[in-house]
Length: 227
Ligand SMILES: N[C@@H](CCC(=O)N[C@@H](CS)C(=O)NCC(=O)O)C(=O)O
Image (cartoon, rainbow, N blue to C red; front, side, top):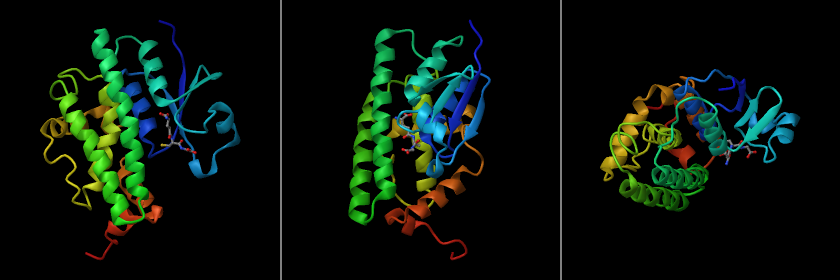
């Protein structure tokens, strides 16, 4: 297989970036990474990514890819082994549910941007409904399809990670009656590649980000030293 060089343009909190990092780590691919400030994007960012979004994968210093799902699929294809099932239906089924994760991430953004309790609860209901569907779609334990870790697992690791932080100061109970989701969430939380996809100060960085939203969720975060 041809050896390529990979450089990932990233952001410390971005869940889409994390998917790509998890894929790189699962497949033991060497890569370099640069984090950019999304509030002050470098001019070249808009040129390399038509949507001006991270992640961007720079291949061999001169070619670029955008869209995390595409980047993960590409990385999986150009390196040995595969994080996809060899069964065509199972692979397509995983892709269907990978697609669902983008909707959940949008709902999570609505949740943390919600200005009042009603909007916050509406977003949480949307999230909960999607996880109720996922509960029925999960095919095995501990991962989505059983013992083997696939790209779908890499995709949902960053989704569940949000709730580790939300649960530190809310009582959302998102997964309380979803036993398969709970097992999956725990298995993903313990996976090295998922742990290592963010820095150790990720929870603090996310809390600071949530405070800056100046939204309903910001008011739920206890002020340091007030307890
Ligand atoms: N569909 C894209 C979504 C990527 C995305 O939304 N990235 C966010 C950060 S998490 C971003 O770069 N936002 C900057 C902007 O929208 O200006 C993917 O899967 O890569």
